[in-house]
Image (cartoon, rainbow, N blue to C red):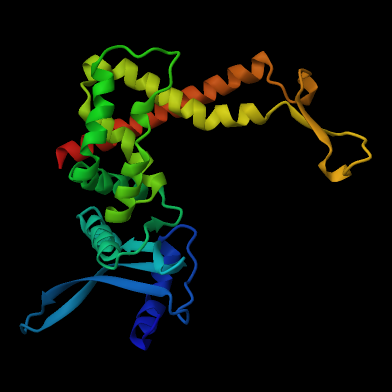
Length: 285
């Protein structure tokens, strides 16, 4: 931190951070790349004197981003217990989003957010994205794929993969990372479909996307082996790669496939529950 007042203030906040933020540790206040944002409320005492009441705070770290930009990462955020569930956490996150935009940083991230913070962040970002003009055509195009009718199980599902131009536009203007945008994208699509008509296809699309993410890449790697081949040329550059058909070398058995399918189904169910919950919260605001 650049000023002594901020360092002294944070020294008083450390016990609260350690007590109320899971897995937290004190930040290095001598590092000028740390920034402290404090949320206070003005109150009047019986004599009419104004005094501030501390509601919460956030600690951010500013990383260098080549060649001439920076990235903001939220490391600690806390609303004190008496003031929680009153909208102050949302307000603080919205302020930080505005800081990231006004300072034109590369992007704004959160360090290992807990589920409640991730849910709040996603609600805020989905609302921002719904009002972001440059991606509306892409969202409408994705939604239209579901409205055309039943999707085939034999095809990939582009509706749940936004175009690269949309990803970059969101990062540049809203400072939302690609990972977070993809997390919000399925919710944006869900908000545009009619669940009673298109839910089966939507579930199929989510399942297909998660299968590719969680099973597809790992299954491609399993069963591959590299074997050195004797040669008079260059020993370090002489090898053969092949896919083994022996169960002992890593090829999936029927039992392992069944376990994967069971795990995938649970993950899909959890993801669908999250999508519905966020969509409900966003629609109710």
